Image (cartoon, rainbow, N blue to C red; front, side, top):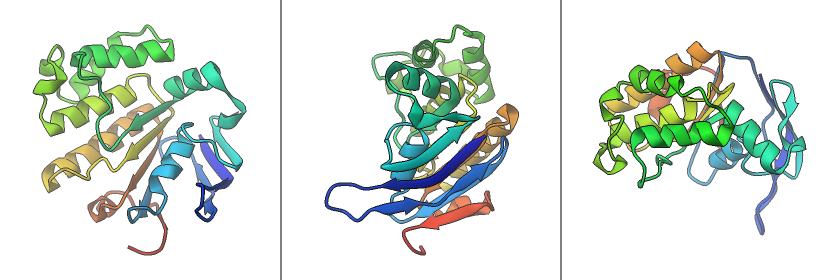
Length: 211
């Protein structure tokens, strides 16, 4: 489902770095651990089609991600990749349900029943019409997860999803991501420096030296 091979990347004035090869089937998980500045988020952005590498290839369900460009890449990403950012990427001017419907719109989907399904799955149906300003941090994170899942992605990428959460909420978020990925038979990749996540995912790699 997700293959990443021979990926090279370089920021200006910094040494080039090589991303480890990755091969994951649907339903499999990977934890990428690393200190701040180790390149974890860069890896996630490359896997998510947000940052083009210097060389190498990312394949999602047999499609070469960086062979796509422009609107074709955007639509493919919207349908096949769900990204949970460290800080919830939800639009403050919209309600919870409007944020989820917007994700549908960008992916060219019209199956709005899935919006209600994921609100229920993540326990936030009662927040459906709420302004995002009224959400707690944990609720906002759940909305962000719902937004990433609402199009039934083949790959779920999560960037530091537990960084600002206490132990109880951190465990809840990881278990939500794992359970939803299994239901979708999707690949789940989490990048983090949070050592607590190691208790939940045994398949892992470390970048930038040991923590």
